[in-house]
Amino acid sequence: MFNKVFSFILFLSLPILTFSQGHTTVSTNLPRLVIGLVIEDFNPDYIDRYWDKFGEGGFQRLYRSGYVCTNHHYDHLIQRPSVNMATLSTGTNPSRHGIVNDSWIDRLKNKEVNAIRDEFYTTVGSDSDEGDRSAMKLMTPTLGDQLKIVTNGRSKVFSIAMNDNSAVLAAGHAADGAYWLDNLSGKMISSSYYVETFPKWAFDFNGFKMADIYIGADWSLLKDINYYSESIDLPKENGYPGRQRSFPYDLGKLKKEAGGSYKILKSTPWGNTLVKDFALQMIPKEQLGADLSPDMLTLVFSSMDYYRYSFGSFSVEMEDTYLRLDRDIAEVLKYLETGFGTNEILIYLTGLNSVSYSANLLKEKYRMTAGIFNPESAIALLKSYLNIKYGEANWIELFANQMIYLDHELIDKKKVNLQEIQNSVASFLNQFEGISSAKSAMEIDANNFVTSEAAPFQNSFHVKRSGDVLIKYEDGWQPKDKYNPLDYTDNNQVPLVWYGAGIKKGTLTRRTNATDVVPTIAAFLGITPPSSVSGKVIDEVIKH
Image 1 (cartoon, rainbow, N blue to C red):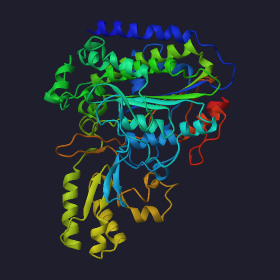
Image 2 (cartoon, rainbow, N blue to C red; image 1 turned 90 degrees about the vertical axis):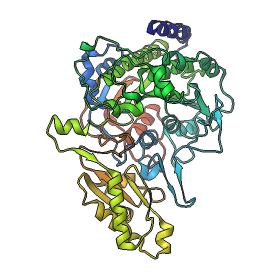
Image 3 (cartoon, one colour; image 1 turned 180 degrees about the vertical axis):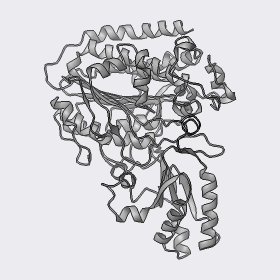
Image 4 (spheres, rainbow, N blue to C red; image 1 turned 135 degrees about the vertical axis):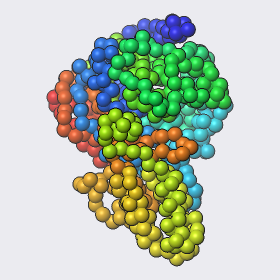
């Protein structure tokens, strides 16, 4: 079945490669096309661990010929894909761009709101409601937005991802298109926020039903099992639904057990291949890089998506995913360099976030201080404490991803001092094993932590959107509810590699920040970055 899929992809791609070879080179010192290769859950250790297994055209090509920033971080507290993508695309922190979490309490509307869902807009490309998305809650411009303004709309800006939040927050406000997988239909879709009429080329692509083809192919190992010597299968792996924990995986069965949802595709290597396929169709059809105005395209790949912790960062499944992703990236690089030439493109490879190592693995195998924190138990004890101290009431409105929201209307009605109850909650939580620090909103807002170890709190805090108390877990500790899967990382370090546009091979060991990517690209393009940018140009990349 895999050979059938591979042959189909060759059939799909060959005409495009021939088309790209016919491009006329534009005479300019600026890169014609900026490509972001962004990988969700990209642990820097993966490059070293799998290095000898990678081919020469993918990760090895970028690292051997590019400029590598080895000490690159997201310097804010809450490491969520939506938060980090907004930071990466705007060049500033959540305290400024406002995407503080996947969702938050809107105090004016008095309800929980999602970072990108917007009922004013509709799905383009399918009949589902998975396209009612927009970037309206993103409070600062992206680099793509700035590029559109500077070139009076002549530059084209696009994004492609498996997940909606990555696609939308990478594209920003003024993009020409953001595309992601519709879990219900298996089609690549967009929102009317970006696209009024679904492009014919995208409609034709969906007609190939690539998601069905990939779902129809079992996920078998690329190599013999003994080849995966860098990986280990942990006995406590949860695996896929139905306790499927060994190859080959019957993806059709997994899809059926998920109620027919194509979401399972995101946790396999084929999700990344689908992103690559769609990109190779988009570039010539949308004429990216075809004129003097530089264009931007962000491709977001997944590392097993929401099942990454069901198997773990040392799993055979993760290694096989990266070996196949290496091939997809190699195909993208070959396509771009054949069509444009290395010096006419600017490519950056980075991670959207980084997977944590299993707390159980760290504790049991390496005797490190680590553990599992149970938020449900902690919140239950906190509720009891607040009831004793302030009276019986539902004081806590929401606890989500390291933020606790208190019921302000209730606090006002009961005439309780908001700062006092915030400090009480923080003080109570600071006594728990597994919590490194809990800080109240009032404390964060009243102090300047930017140059201290508490800087991630300050960088994550937005006065209108953040919770009343923010929590940082101890290193190695991971929160896990009784019924909800683990979805947390304390690792804020990700790879960053620059390639093309005259960049010479080099290595930078000083610390860089995700907010530095936007001003550095702006410097390559010769434009002023958005005024909201807080990062700095990585001069070494340009001057090296």
